[in-house]
Length: 264
Image 1 (cartoon, rainbow, N blue to C red):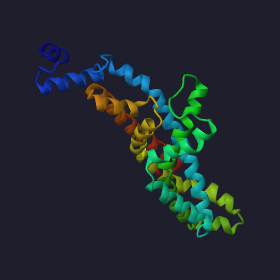
Image 2 (image 1 turned 60 degrees about the horizontal axis):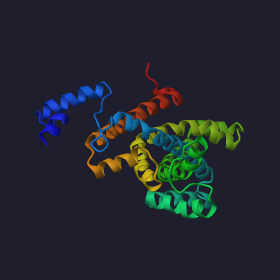
Image 3 (image 1 turned 30 degrees about the vertical axis):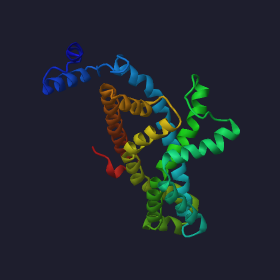
Image 4 (image 1 turned 135 degrees about the vertical axis):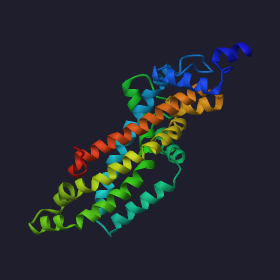
């Protein structure tokens, strides 16, 4: 036990351990896993691909879903279409992520065999098939808030003076919605999406364990159950970097979409 404590550096003062770990992290060394004794950086990198596939696919699907539903809800405000979409958003927020994932497995994966129940596969085609249901699950969990925010801003933009002026000149309603109202309503929605980055990562932990994807989320749960602290620290640090990166990307996109928020 003394030899292992000395090898792991646990016999040194805490502040010495912290500065040593921080210095190693700056050089790309996250230590070695307690369970496998392999470098944490390599283990995290091996699991990053599945999580990246899930985050990108889930974000794309959630944006497509939220833009479509919010546009329809704003265009047909007060009708049964608007009521149905608002009911869907409230229901989706209330439904647990793992339950919707299991429901998709029961409805689509098992009866049809089109999608695997779990795993990530080895080829690109298998990756696409494996990521469809997890991405839909993540999109269902994240799209409702985006729909509500975008719908409210679209309705506000449609009632503004410049839209009414364009309508008085005979601009078609569809063009008013897509070319005039949507770009201005998209800025708050971009901010919401960037803020939801943390929720996306948290959702990926649940989704990856539901579909047995070998990503960072499932690796984090495994590391917690094994008390593999170097692995936990490595994945947590990467999650923090991803959250900050999403926030910076959101600020940049807001400046591109709306010149009023640009900084010289």
